[in-house]
Amino acid sequence: MDLIVARPEGLYCPPGDFYIDPWRPVARAVITHAHSDHARTGHGHYLAHDDSAGTLRTRLGDITLQTLPYGEVIDHHGVRVSLHPAGHVLGSAQVRVEHGGEVWVASGDYKLEDDGTCVPFEPVRCHTFITESTFGLPIYRWPAQPVLFADIDAWWRANAAAARPSVLFCYAFGKAQRILHGVDASIGPIVVHGAVEPLNAVYRAAGVALPPTLRVTDPGVDKALLATALVLAPPSAQGTPWMRRFAHHADAFASGWMQLRGTRRRRGVDRGFVMSDHADWPGLQKAIGGTGAERVFVTHGSVAVLVRWLNEQGLEAQGFQTEYGDEDDEAPSAPAAGAEATAPPVAEPGGDASPLEQGIAADTGSAPAVPDIGEIDDLAGGPERP
Ligand SMILES: [Zn+2]
Ligand SMILES: [Zn+2]
Image (cartoon, rainbow, N blue to C red):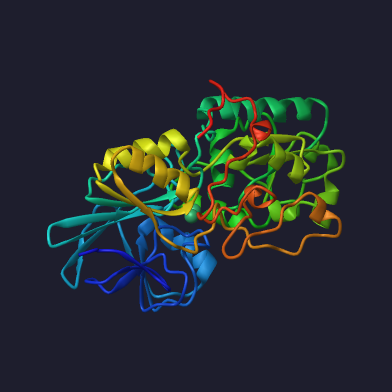
């Protein structure tokens, strides 16, 4: 019997009578992490990791929430349920479900490299693995974090030397805290947008070391201070009046999509830093291999490409129709006049638009999105076609 099936409401465990990251309101929901396409309002009961309590309540308000530490098993209708680190954002978990000798793992979103802001991904042995495929194309290979942060630091340092604020657009939950944790805070002051600071507070409360951050409204935050500052803002702030205070600023965008040159061009920023909270192509392969699973279901992203590759490896693989978004949590706030020219439209439901939906292919899994080779930035080791 299949322990997890795709239903119109979400991924469903029939013997346990609960859903995992459902996209329609249900009685019982196990939530892998607090990004909005995975954690939605309206469920009767939520189960998530201890470290997701702060982000879930920040986002969803007063919900009926039960939390678990990693590895602790609870029994629900004879189904053993436990949560295991996914390495994606604070509190992110893979859901292990065991019943009648069968083990299934639904991974939610995950990343393999330890970023210091959440418990690193751990492979969990299972018969059947449910994986995302947000960046499931061979072109996606992330730079190692020391390389990434050396690039960000060098950009910030050069801007500060020229008395230009360094505005770095990044998602408010997860990405912003990774950047705070990873940059060299001795370069200058760090200012964050109002959407970022509440999440910083949740991370700090969970014991994650983040450097001091300022809000633009704090005393002492003036033109002189901003001239050497790193400013972290969500993509929705781009083109809004909030940006006007950063005169002659340099701007950049941190995202896995920045591996595509066209994305950076459409975003209209000076620099793109290739940084993702999802597994890259080698990471997906390694994670799936590490589970020992013989069956794999692929939920979102480049579903067809990953399914084909897994079938070629002799695994039984197929896609699951889901309504997960591709990256993140940024609700589409109304862009300021003129912002449409640089910001791609936001995919519904649940998150930031894939750059691929602009002329290449929607990232919903039906069509493999193969960017033109001209879109690919200079990759270490050279790009490789799927
Ligand atoms: Zn996510
Ligand atoms: Zn996702």
